[in-house]
Length: 331
Ligand code: RIB
Ligand code: CA
Image (cartoon, rainbow, N blue to C red; front, side):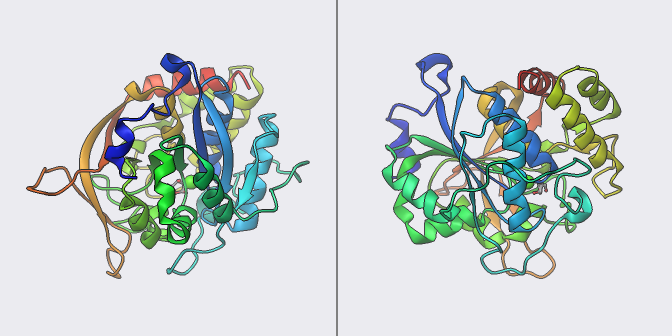
């Protein structure tokens, strides 16, 4: 089913105006900022029906991203949400992790134990295919905050699964901001550019939160203080995660505070007015050694060229952090 076909169907909209919850799947590589995105999603009980969480190799290896998702789920007291471990390496490119940014555990300096409940026995890709095949048309939103390997593999197994999706919301890519893992590429797309290209071209409406917008939401010392002073359990824990990220001397710290990438995807689902989006087309570099993983964004409507992607260009950072803090304080 193409994106146009979804427009005539009852949208998988937030409970706000249709009274039903939005079904979502969060595909992630926790990951310090993935953890914040999971906390926000797990806190939005009234608006988001998290059908499942799938994990992928990215910031750290596959066993650790799976363990970390289960640990965050336990901290959020949402063990009823199933977690499925996914692909252990990119489709074509060699594995690459970001332990230098997320710590050896993947969750910064957070004390991490063995979760009481682990992952489900089914592989994430098989579960995605089975779930999308059984789902009603346009009934599920997929959020991807790591390399897009799992969804690309699912599309290769069963291209028809696009009919079940109303939108794919991605954290990845960069245009105006330049890259964070190379001068021209953002980490998620760089790790698996072939997967990103396949997902961007699958025909489902795509909304992308790239470095262009995530660099506008930074965990400054003031934000760390506000989260820590909240007196609530999870914000205080997130303050420690933010503080860890702020100690990392990496190139994106060209302004006070580390960018908080992944929660932008969930915040958009809960409060779209936080962001300004522009239609565009996006091509992913999968061959050049120098520009591997670059996302070439074209905002110009060319004769006969589709503009299937919405690219976030602006964020209201003050409202974003106020909403994030209010939501996770309820966990
Ligand atoms: O480039 C930032 C992205 O890469 C984030 O999703 C972060 O968690 C890492 O996966
Ligand atoms: Ca991530």
